[in-house]
Each structure stands twice: as C-alpha cells, then as structure tokens.
Length: 476
Ligand code: FAD
Ligand code: NAI
Image 1 (cartoon, protein in one colour):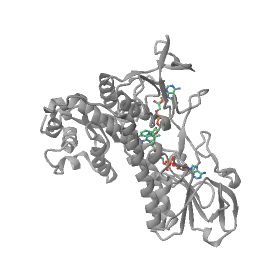
Image 2: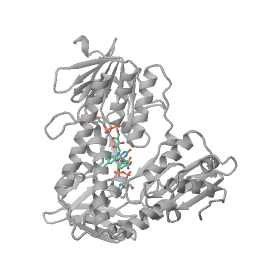
Image 3: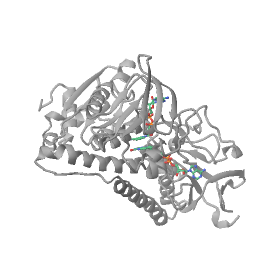
Image 4: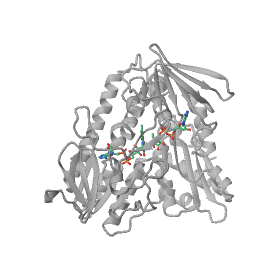
C-alpha cells in the first residue's frame, strides 16, 4: 500500500455528517481522507450526500420557487401588485435547483482542498483490521486506505412500500420527486410526514391535485398537538387533501393511472387514482457496500449501526454518525455529531445535546420546534406553564401580510426553565434559533422576555410568548 494512503482518520461518506467531520478533523491537524460514492449525472463525484443532492437543498430550492409562484398568482394582488399573466416553466425551475445542487457539490470540493482533506470518489469497503488500524478499499480503483480512526457516515435511503419498487418515473422516492419535469395532474403521496408535506406543497402550489394518505390517525404526532392542529387546518385550507388513519392494501401501476387501494379510517375500501406517486414513509440506515462484517461492525435490529452517546461503536477507533445511527435523521444533527467525533478523536471534549436539536418543516406556514411538546410534558407528569402569541398580533407579520400561526413557550412551573418552544407561522425556521440558544444555555422564559428584541420583527412574537408564560404579554 502506498504510504500516502495512510491517514489518521478516514471518513466514509461525504454527506453533512461526513464532510463536516472531515473538515473539523483536518482543522485540528489530523491527516484526513474522505471517501464518498455519490455520482452526478455524468458519473463524476457529487459530495454532499442526500442533503445536498436529493434532500435539504434541492427541496428548499423547489419550495422557494413554488412559494414565489403562489405568491405571484394568489397573494401579490393584496399588495396592489397586478400581474396580468403568470406562468411556470418547470424545466427552468428544476434546472435552477440542479445548479444550486452543483454549486454546493463544488463548494464541498473547495472546502476539502482548502482544509487539506484528501477526497476519494467511490464506495468505501472495509477489508480488514490490522496492527495499524483498518484497511478500506475504494471500489472501482485499486486504492486502499488505512487509518486507526474511521468515521462511518453512510447516511440513509428511502424506505419503499413492501412490494412496490421505486421506478423514479411514476413511483417516486425523494429522488424522483425532486426531479419531476411537468406538473402532474394528480399526485398521490403515501406518508404525510416531513417529505410528503414539503414536496406535496411544492406540486400543489404549481397546480397538482395532491392527496396524502397517512397510516397514523394523528397528524404530525411528533409536533406539539396545538401546532399540528393549526398546520392541518392551514394545509387543508390550501388544498392539500390529507387522509389520516388509512391502511394501504396495494398499488396497481396500470398504464393509464396508478391506483392505490386502501381502507380509510372507517375501514371502507377506497381507491386513489393518480399520475405520480411519492412514497415517503421514512428512511432506512444505509450500510450497503460497507462490508462492516469484515471488521465485526454491529447493527441493531432496525439496521442502524450501534453506537453509544458519543458515537463510538463497540470497535476501537470506529465511530458512526448521522442518519446511519439512532436519533433524528436531520442534517444538522449529523453535522453536530461529525464535529463532536472529530474533536473527541483529537483529544478534545466533543458533545452533542440531542435534546436541543431543532426540527423544522419548510411548508407555508413553516413549523419549527425545540424541546418537549405539551403532550410529552403531560405524559411525563411534569408541571409546566405555557405562553402563546399569535402572529396576527405582530406588527411585522401584519406588514408582510403573513399572519397565520403562533409561537408557544413551555416552561417549568416551578423553576421557569424553558422546556420547549414551538412555532407555526412565517419564518419559524429562523425564529427557532433564538429558542435553541436559550435552551442550550438553560434559560428561563423570563430570560427571553427580558431581552430587547428589535421592532418590528417576527422575533417579538417569541418574546411575547415568553411574557405570556407569566400572563403578561404586552400586545394582546
Ligand atoms: P447522507 O447525507 O445520506 O450522506 C451519506 C453519504 O455517504 C452519501 O453521499 C452516500 O453516497 C455515501 N455513502 C454511503 N455508503 C458509502 C460507502 N460505503 N462508501 C462511500 N460513500 C458511501 N434534514 C434537515 O436537517 N433539513 C432539511 O430540510 C432536510 N430536508 C430533507 C429533504 C429530503 C427530501 C430528504 C430525503 C431528507 C432531508 N433531510 C433534511 C434529512 C437529511 O438529508 C439527512 O438527515 C442528512 O443528509 C444525513 O446526513 P448523513 O451525512 O448522515 O448522510
Ligand atoms: P417521516 O417519518 O417524516 O414521515 C413518514 C410518514 O409516513 C409518517 O407519518 C408515517 O406514519 C407514515 N407511514 C409510514 N408507513 C406508512 C404506510 N404504510 N402507509 C401510510 N403512511 C405510512 O419520513 P419522511 O417524510 O419519509 O422523511 C424521512 C426523514 O427525512 C424525516 O423523518 C426527516 O428526518 C428527514 N427530512 C427532514 C426534513 C426537514 O428537516 N425539513 C425534510 C424532509 C425529510
């Protein structure tokens, strides 16, 4: 083996977990290689993983484009803006998305160069453990990397409905759903979770008739119930048809239409006909091609790599982070773990607090939260106080013409320590950062309430919700 293929750390996977881990380890003076298998349309490298290629970034590009279209066609009139005729060029919208993805791929290549991370394109496959550490072959080449420390960041893949393979032309995972080139007349979505709501919103805004079929009787059960109720009301008002408590019996992919046979919540047999079907029923950890057996890497019963709270696997020097391990499947959680593991390898004290990882759903209204929901606090028997504040009473939201939703703060009844903050409404994704910071510092609701917030801003709604915990909101 060539001496220059010996590293201090090899990172397998260049999604947000892996590429950030590689950069942080290199910043700390370690000799780092990162190997990633993702291929662009031309077969070339496309680092960034699911997030950059078929996840966070392209979905937000399409959400933004489609929201602009909806604003132009439905809401600009309220501002006195007359648009005689507005149209949508889906090819151009998708091409714009592709450009943004490419810019992000190139950005990561640049960051690797800047930080001295050596990048290999191909599938990393464990070969063996020896006295120097671990050997990893890069498939498709005769390159073999060696390192005493390996960070596995191989991410996740879409979960198919049993018996229904993705063809990415009509039966779509997130991959195909982000590359639709013509607005479908009827779009079916199985699973009313995060992907279903975000991508369902994109195509509804552009004119598709969108129906979501969800197995659970409750809508967005991970969100605070009050927030989920408001979101459900808004989404159905916008035209998303959301059926809860259904049981999918089978899917026929006939030539003229896809037919989804299901039992509705009353156990009555129904058929949904659609032209395209997105299946978004969660994601599975990805360890394919890794050949973890060669070194004895352990998976749990659901296929995730087993790790402790610090992302250590049972094997010395082998770490795993991001979607391939327990915890929320979110890019920023993967990044946090990547930084923490790199710092721990370098002898520092890396740490991730899963309790302050924020959640965001980028629909309109946006939904965002951090910490506990009201139903979780009730179930745990924890005494709390709640304060809510509607955007309808916020000056900036009125000026924007975007007054749907509210912010809600939950605080310990005795100590006033913040236990959870929830928002549904404009820019909730940005507003939640203040709440995450407050919770990470162990703040009380009074701490937020006593901090000066610029006027007029949406963030004043957070402050008013915090004041509301003590029953002393000022503007309602
Ligand atoms: P991944 O991003 O999946 O990257 C893993 C990488 O490893 C891939 O490039 C893969 O090719 C590579 N790989 C796998 N096996 C090997 C191997 N053996 N050798 C070499 N390379 C290998 N999260 C958010 O926080 N915000 C969002 O807005 C958001 N939107 C999303 C929208 C969609 C449609 C989807 C599907 C997901 C979204 N997510 C979002 C989730 C987010 O994409 C994931 O949580 C995140 O990408 C996980 O990062 P990761 O580094 O663990 O894995
Ligand atoms: P999800 O877990 O958010 O939603 C899946 C939904 O499908 C659930 O409501 C589930 O009850 C339902 N479901 C499962 N099996 C079903 C069946 N047989 N029939 C009908 N419904 C069924 O998963 P999703 O939307 O696939 O997204 C995967 C993950 O990607 C998310 O959990 C999240 O971690 C990440 N993501 C994050 C985003 C963000 O942060 N904004 C955006 C998109 C994805």
